[in-house]
Image: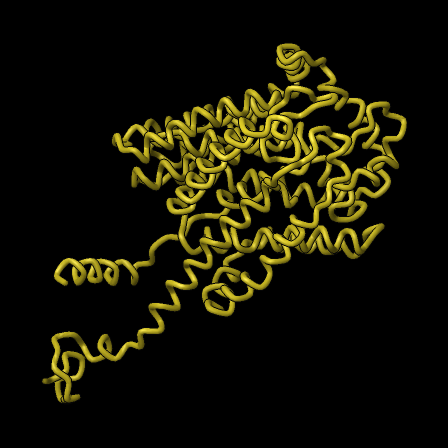
Length: 455
């Protein structure tokens, strides 16, 4: 019959579809399905590796310092060939993602590279940087490929399964799931430390918060149950930071809802968000100590937050030694190196207990300034540019709240950003902007839906 695309040509085939559609090789569809399935696998695998969940961790904090990390290293190294395979299947897409990286991030990458090259221990910094890159790339590719809605759905699935798995593990093996020694009674599940479990549970709680539009289904009931268990997990971890983060997350989610519903003008949204941040910083500066004392007292701690104030004072001297490019990427994630500057502290801190201070010590004051500027600008932009679609708006609102949680939690916990730990891949899932369908893709998708309906 006559071809629809080329009316003057007969190709000897009968059919109503255009010749280009009939002649399209089938391997393109299978390759796309294969690459998408591989990307889902990589995303879940990165989340598992980031959380560090494993079986049979020693019950005391001192024993955990000598845990053999071979299984975690094998998981990290196994990500490399799978990630390269996905890049090989989609080189043009990956190159497009790279070209859209903001200029401010390129400046930050340059500062991190300079810090690594000038590190006091180059091999240690290079290994730390590679670990962060390996665990970051698949998550960023997933967000760029599928957008905010599917990424949030992926996070919900992972959070729900993880919450129930940790509950069952703790119930079956309480000698491993509950810490002993100085942290006796703190639940940590399959995590290495109760603080990691608390941080993850707080973010999981917010991810699993149900929408008012959710219908009653067995799946939604399962998700709601996991949400309650995630909140309970944050409490039983005995991490005061985790409990505070749950409250901060709910407040951030409510703030995003009020902004989207009551402030349709984007300029007004930007003004309100900016003023709120300024007031929040001012309140923390003038009244933070008294409020922190009350909060710490409710958890049986003093104003020093279990000695954190003493630790930070000691580390400031180390910061002033190398203020421009730091001591080297990831150097202050190593307890042995921290001990050099904190040997006079009796309780022997193994981390900085402050992610911003940790980053400043690692990559220098200019590097952490650029990173914070990017975080704040992206947070404000996401809070202001909430979409009209209700499903997408809910996903973006949760992204805003999760960003706020991790930014606030980083003041009292180390390793929450730029480290292959629990909250870093979670932050990467919400930090980039979700994909937007282009004007040329919309008619194609509409025609594709119509064709499937007629088939």
